[in-house]
View (spheres, rainbow, N blue to C red):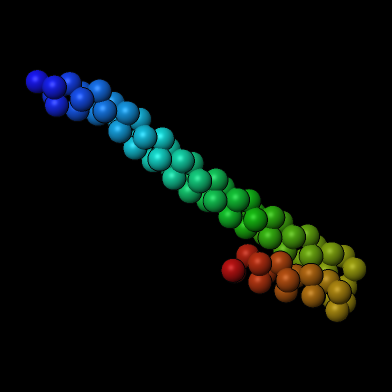
Length: 76
């Protein structure tokens, strides 16, 4: 009888610890995915901004370098 009472007392604590660990893991994974998506969107925006500058100002080395940098960041 005594061991059943100890297991009944410890089991909810174990459940809470497992739940907290899973919440931390999934929250961290979600935050990483959000950051990667934000960086990719920013790279695409920079790429289109460089292409626009290239079209309006002509294809200079600077605009081509900006476009290549943004394209590389989007690919990575």
